[in-house]
Amino acid sequence: MDIATIIGILSGFGLVIVAIGWGGGLSWFFDLPSIMIVMGGTFGAILINYPFSTVLKVIPAAKSIFMRKETDIQRIVNLFVEMSGVARREGLLALDRMDSQFKNPFLSKAVALILDGAEPADIEIILEAEIQSTEEKYRIGADIFTNMGNFAPAMGLMGTVIGLVKMLMQMNDPSKIGPAMSLALLTTFYGIILSYLVFLPAAGKLRVQSNHDTLIKSLIMKGTLALQAGDHPRMMKQKLLSFVAPREK
Image 1 (tube, rainbow, N blue to C red):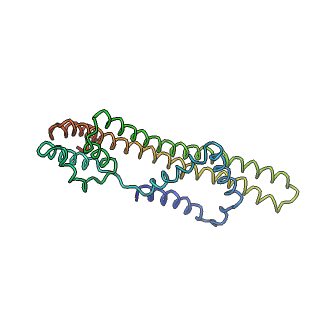
Image 2: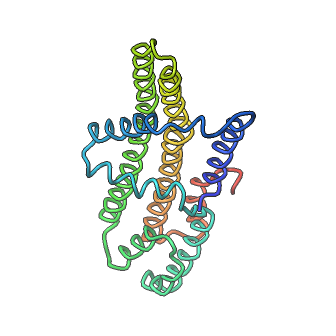
Image 3: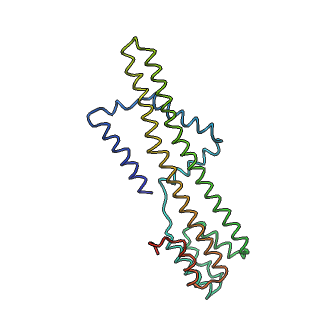
């Protein structure tokens, strides 16, 4: 589980809720019609903007925001250095017995291609295609969340206009002015809080995850090709350390 996401949600919404409840009632800030306008309008706009099959792809992306375990780059580098030594001493087929150490599915696939005797050019094509597929998956998820972040405040503004129209049409009845004004203000509030505390941060998180996964998979592809070429462990380490941030080396 991504602890940063959990802390961010708890601190962001927690402080807003505390501020709302300070000297007032939380119930004042709950208005079902306002929620329906913002949420219904936002998701409706998303369904108009994207095919339904594309929208469904955002579900696994959303799960990864909360349930995700970061891959240790240094561990991958060390594993390739170890595999390089084994391959030079015993041959590439000896890597088969190290399968239990391949916690990363992409790494398992890359080593399997070596064991199957695939040509280096073919391995590069196959792995590069999967890297691009990963980037596309994250890009779609980030785009959808970004658009949701753009649509939500607009839906809030629409709700504000609806509330103001209702208020102006009922000026002769003071008892109805309050609820209409509440609708006008709360829809803007809901649109802003959903946009800047949920949708846009989720899009940013997916972009960060995309960069990290692309880096890891590019490192694995580089290591796989070097492994197949028979690079010395020291040379392997130098090649792969270029993917590691200076402070982590």
